[in-house]
Figure 1 (cartoon, rainbow, N blue to C red):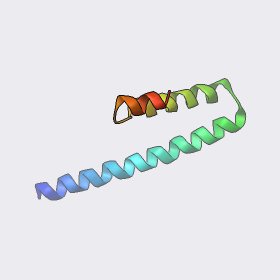
Figure 2: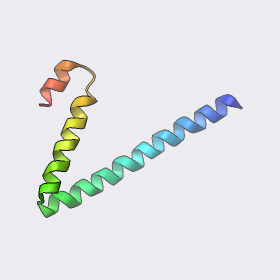
Figure 3: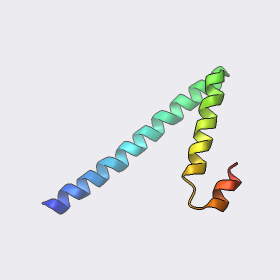
Figure 4: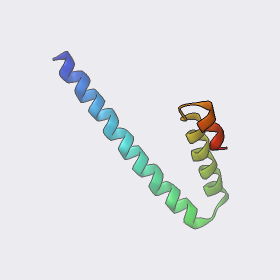
Length: 64
């Protein structure tokens, strides 16, 4: 039962990540069309997230 609960938890986390990613993409596209300072700030935030999620320093530096 423990293994089943852990597997279910993992699947739930993956699905939630996909939903959040889709929501972020939708927000990003909407803001980009408006050409607001907020959109620029949001793009900067996403770029910074990519740098911090890079597997190593060299890859992170390429994103800068």
